[in-house]
Amino acid sequence: MKKASRRAARLTSIVGDGKLEQVEALEALRLAAEAATDALPDALMKCETDEQRRQVVRQRDLVLLAFLQSLNKSLKLTGAAFEQTAQNLEAAAGEVQKKAKGLKDATEAIHLFADLVRLAGSLALAFGGGG
Image (cartoon, rainbow, N blue to C red; front, side, top):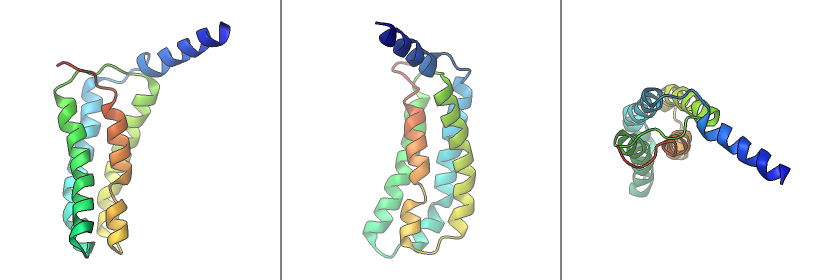
């Protein structure tokens, strides 16, 4: 019984006891969407096939979708894990534009937005239903 109580307390602190604010979370998502959109032309130039281009565009679209979907919702989970995710997302957004200028091939272009997709998706989970 003690393990369950500790686990419940730990889960509560992960999701609800942080200082993440809605404006901060939305700003991180906005920066990621903007960085992905700005880096898109460089990434597409390295693609050699239509399938590679579709993969790059899909990943950019996922980052943009995470931002757009979060605009209509309220921030529900504010824990330290989500706060850290927002910080990591902002840092990754800054790196994407730098990396886009130095892409060597289509594989790098396809993987350019991988961190943004993962982090934006994770941060979007902090938003609940309703507006």
